[in-house]
Image 1 (spheres, helix red, strand yellow):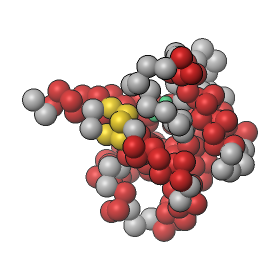
Image 2 (cartoon, rainbow, N blue to C red):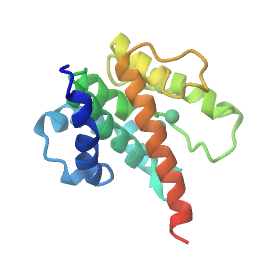
Image 3 (spheres, protein in one colour):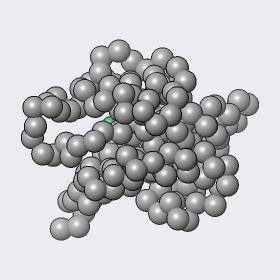
Amino acid sequence: MNGFAFLRLPVAMYRAFPCAYHPERIEDEAYIAIVSPLLAEPGIQKLGDFVQHSDITLLMHVRAVSWMTYTFCKTLGWDHVAAARAGILHDYVTYDWHVPDPSHRLHGFRHPGFAVTNSRKITELSALEENMIRRHMWPLTVIPPKYKEAWALTLVDKVLATRETLRKYQKH
Ligand SMILES: [Fe+2]
Ligand SMILES: [Fe+2]
């Protein structure tokens, strides 16, 4: 990474954002090739049935996190393939967390582990990808991320989750 990459980052993120919740606008062929096999999985498509925050489904959320983390990491010369994949997989659960059920009590703490288990059923995870998924809820999950890409994912996830939650109040 050259010393000026951090200066390019805000511009790259600003330019990428209009595609975050409109993935049909994404023209980056490399990105599409990375995420397409994951998006074709029925379990990932099922995330479209679950609400994440306000009117944003879980599938819309993970696609936005994937695209923005990919842009973040690619701009800095970091592992953007892992970023795209872990973004799609980081919240891969098979339930609606708004519906109370003993099987997913303490969702905030436990869902990164569920996501790792579910992801392994559809793809192999590198150590980096596993860490990105497992630590994305830091500081809730006390152990911090181990890799710079994992820090990028947890940061992007928090920014987008906050924005998605605030939409509920913006509409009134
Ligand atoms: Fe999460
Ligand atoms: Fe998330």
